[in-house]
Image (tube, rainbow, N blue to C red):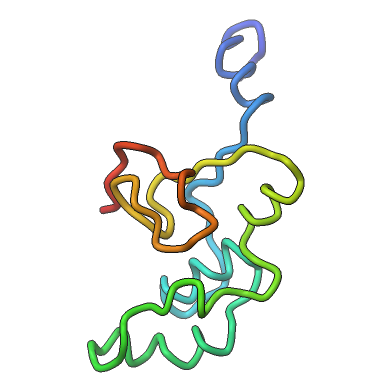
Length: 111
């Protein structure tokens, strides 16, 4: 798009980042979400997703399974950058991990 044709979209794109509809090299989505949000899947994730997918294991362990240095939004917080998620690691303004509490899109339902 040319800037003079779509000035509003260009202004938004220059001020905000939207990470959406991107793909990573993962075997399943539980694994892929972690690769997308941390560039790493922990040993806990790698070992528990098969049982979780077969409905034979515990629920996703949340923060306990996360990387030591945190997710992409932990890096934003440390850098003083504002952030919000719309359904990743939570739903209906209820975050499933601590670093996203208060940073969820207020009316977004994860599908």
